[in-house]
Amino acid sequence: MISTSERLNRLIASQTLEMSERSKELVAQGIDIINLSVGEPDFNTPDYVKEAAKKAIDENYSFYTPVAGYPELRDAVVQKFKQDNNLEFERNQVVISNGAKQALANVILSIINKYDEVIIPAPYWVTYAEIDKIAEAHNIFLPTTIENNFKVTPEQVEKAISYRTKAFLFSSPSNPAGSVYTRDELQKLAEVFAKYDNIYIISDEIYEHINFVGKHESISQFDFIKDRVIVINGVSKCYAMTGWRIGYIGAPVNVAKACEKLQGQYTSGASSISQKAAYAALTVKSDYTVKMNKIFKTRRDLIVEKMEQIPGLKYSIPQGAFYIFPDISSFFGKSYGNHKIYNAKDLCMYLLDEAHVSTVPGSAFGITNCIRISYAITKDRLEEAMERIKKAFVKLK
Image 1 (cartoon, rainbow, N blue to C red):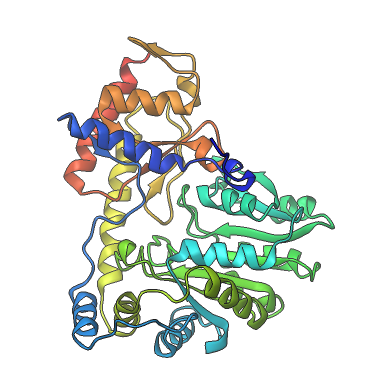
Image 2: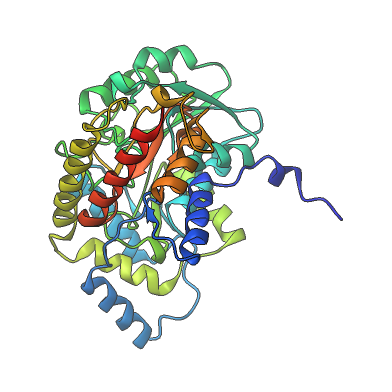
């Protein structure tokens, strides 16, 4: 058999999708699995967005789109940055992509060379490390702690910077920890980067509107580094449009042009219908994101209350997104039946088999003693899941 590429062999399969697939197999066997492993809002896309898509179909928006996106959608992104974030971008600094994941891949492959170093706080979204591998970069992971809400300090970052450092990549609100950087924390990080004019800052803000601690803050707001900040965002999380696949960047002109050039060669422009839907999402006045945020906060409060009832769990209270990332290391070495818990993956498999609840091991996100639990699920199912989890933990001796 002819072998696959070295590039592919460097990658690992997404453990979030792996757990999801295992869950589906058990569901097919008739087992009631509660899936807390996938990061997807359980809401439907707003009706006004769906209507815009239907209108686009009726008006025959069925031809190739501009590689960087329809001009009106790029302008809507510019306006969104201004209204929501007080950030000044122009149309030529915005590129529309097939989801925020492609937007991120475009950026990494456009600015990173072989052996460049990318600093990433851990825990991190699983794809960060893998996209860097495709670019043949060297990942520099900075460990964080529950005590510090899984956020890096300026001192950590500065210590990690070397002559090979090309980028700093992080998210706020965070997947998987739910942590949110304050304006003051971002400013102190920005002051570090101000000393090094050869480093890009890639800010993943896809969970911007799922924030329980106030106004979203972007590191791009600081004028003294804004010419090196690349903002990644999209409509998937805040408008429940994961399947529509529309992401975007706000970036320095040279980076935006590079991303457009790259995207032009391997996908061209994003779906015409999805772009028209995204335009409606960004321009029609609605309280949809506010209502969604309130519901997620209620679920956050519920899951924290349930966590408190499980002895041995250690956690920080999520400030945004829809995940909690508890430390479960106190259960290492314990067992029940045929299950012996040596690590977080063992625990996740135990919860799947014993509690019929799907979670994700923290090793997927760069922290080995935690698991990620998503609360993007109805309140009733979340309560049932946490009761099952609690009973399963009690059985471990």
